[in-house]
View 1 (cartoon, rainbow, N blue to C red):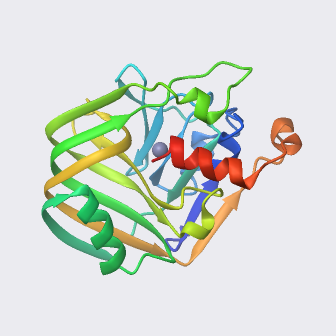
View 2: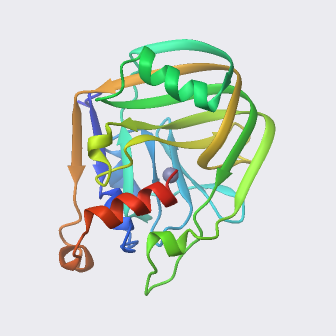
Length: 237
Ligand SMILES: [Zn+2]
């Protein structure tokens, strides 16, 4: 029976920092742990958006395609969707959204999934460009990334809020991706303005981390918390 009170995360954001971009879980297995979420593909190949049991890749060329079950990911977070809050949003800027959502739904020290379906006055995303081994670091790999934007876009914001204590394991604070309804615009969300939308929040008591313990590069890596913290602030916000 699918549990709706747990985030399942494969890998850590921290492992992407030194460039451990090899996919270590299949999309098929990932989707057995959740029907909704975000991530990246093998080789840091674009941005993954998982909605209603389907995983999509926003690619660096701006195209969006559905991911096949055999494809692999180095990092992803998923959950089974069952929001405990649903609220209409009208005319909300990003900064106000983030402050208000943390306050209204008491997110500061909890894990939560954030989903916003509706119309957006403005959306700006970026997409990590595919890397080839030997891999560069996350900061080097994302130094130049294509950005995409649209006005009056219908679509869905999906992602998570995590307590800042967990920066490194994941992104502390908000980590949001976007997919337009027509699949013409997607990626890691950089900026948005809500026109009319519905916000859904799902709080989680449990955060389940699944590590790639069969991956040689992962086993050998010497992780450094300070480097990871700086890299996440640079590459993921
Ligand atoms: Zn992202």
